[in-house]
Image 1: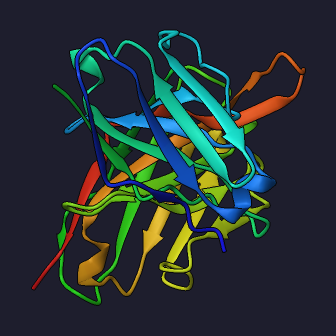
Image 2 (image 1 turned 180 degrees about the horizontal axis):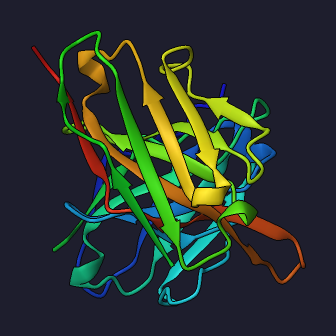
Length: 107
Length: 125
């Protein structure tokens, strides 16, 4: 199956650390990318290839993977990090599914 | 580097529409491209992908047989022909470029690095 499952919502206190997970069988084979999506804006990649930050992304964003689970960690969350976050990968058929999405609220 | 979508509108169920995505500021033919959509109140959904030369195409199961992705590299433009539209196709449609970063392991990691602002398709009677 190429489904990618995420927790619907998490909250984090300002300045604290939050981890978002993404589960799917395809993650055992293919790397995960993570996107931040704010209302009315285009999505922005914050992690690519499991643990690489694209140019311009703050180092408080980090990624990791273990088995069928990919994780996105925000260390020292800022108010501006409040958004929906989606993992994204591919599968053996050439599909590129997104995860179900996690809404991050910064308290 | 920019992507601009156009062509979204209100259409009746069963109708057709063609979306366009114009790229600028980069060598368009060198990059694979994808369409991604977001229905109201829903998450991001990958729709279709096309390789740089256009020879490799993949579709999500939900649109297979109804939506057709194509590109004209001489015009730096990608298209999404939408036929047999359904109410559930109502969404903001984004086009995105597949770029890459080279990791510390020297591996090429591909991801959607440039997105358009989206165009809205509403299917309703």
